[in-house]
Image (cartoon, rainbow, N blue to C red):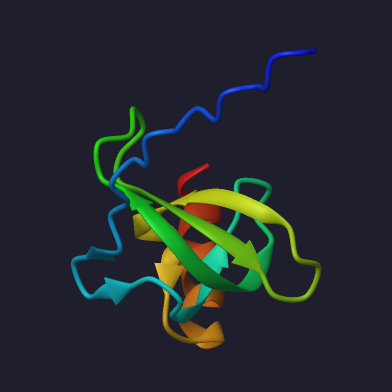
Length: 91
């Protein structure tokens, strides 16, 4: 008779769900790395990322998971357009 496989418990990591004035599951506008403005929902935060504080989001129109810098997250589409214009000026 074959032995039964033991269930291994995978340890859960602690997720950061609040950062500055943003919270998980909040709807925001983001500017992605390819300079696209998209509506997204926050999943979790990465405050110690190599490039600066980052946010994991799921874009609402197409359901893609992305990681964007926290400085590229804003509350309105109008602010996102202004942010895009400012970043284009610096390039």
